[in-house]
Image (cartoon, rainbow, N blue to C red):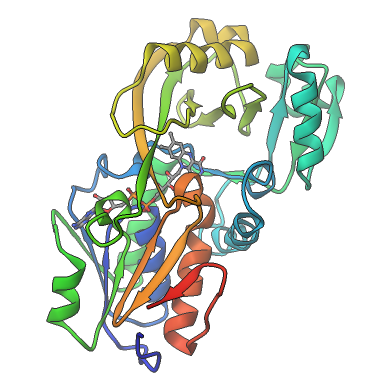
Length: 341
Ligand SMILES: Cc1cc2nc3c(=O)[nH]c(=O)nc-3n(C[C@H](O)[C@H](O)[C@H](O)COP(=O)(O)OP(=O)(O)OC[C@H]3O[C@@H](n4cnc5c(N)ncnc54)[C@H](O)[C@@H]3O)c2cc1C
């Protein structure tokens, strides 16, 4: 097991600058550890699953399908997002449905907490673009969202400001780093790239589309109840909207015609003006997941592996980093997510 009497000046090498590794690097650098973050791709991070994510911070909505541990880690993470990046938008999120999905909408309401019901007038007051579109909606006021492609560089800049070093184009193996510096700590956040050490990992494909229009304004993500996937429209800067996301047990890349039709159809159902929007990008990412779809912090000798963030990386990465730090500083074990070899 990792020696837990590490001093704040023990060096920490983190592998993978996606959302998991970025939060680890930030919290360890702020705690005074000399931190080096290794990332094999360049600063654009297009190889990372994090590049393709929606960036919703939605612990209450996710509780419809996720285990309670996700809500717990997610709610703690919201506090950390607020503390570290106070400009993170916390405008809440909306869940809407068309009449034929009424029973699924009611089920969603029963399965989740932290929402209030809006009638059509209240919905129009909150999101004027949705006036007359839906009879009612669920509003989750405590939820937030980030733009992954803007927030990752922001986190990387914060890591450097806290004294950390980031090495892009640095493709390293956890076991080599651990051997190189037995007194240091290695935190392996390679996502799917860690399959050599964690053969139980699989990729769950998520497809997304980016569209642009000035005809619709939204201040918060809107989820549309759908029989197969939780489809959503997330507003981004510069009149962009991200449409996401499918969830497919496959590891190929690209977007199928069927998925594209469903994603574009969902946007059109939220507002017909999306029909005139310009398609900017089709893309997909592979969510790193274990068989139970739950995150894991695995501890063996001086290496800590943080992985399996599945569809909740942005939601839970800050809390996972805090737990890792608490383990290194005080030997504190979180039995729900930590496994010691
Ligand atoms: C379409 C889609 C929508 C999503 N929406 C949301 C959402 O709304 N909210 C949410 O919370 N989550 C969402 N997710 C899930 C989220 O994206 C993932 O949980 C998260 O990105 C996983 O982060 P990670 O840091 O573990 O992995 P990654 O982001 O893949 O980062 C791993 C990094 O390690 C690097 N690496 C690998 N091997 C090496 C090596 N040998 N040396 C150096 N570097 C290496 C890789 O290049 C990569 O940059 C979504 C995912 C998808 C696909």
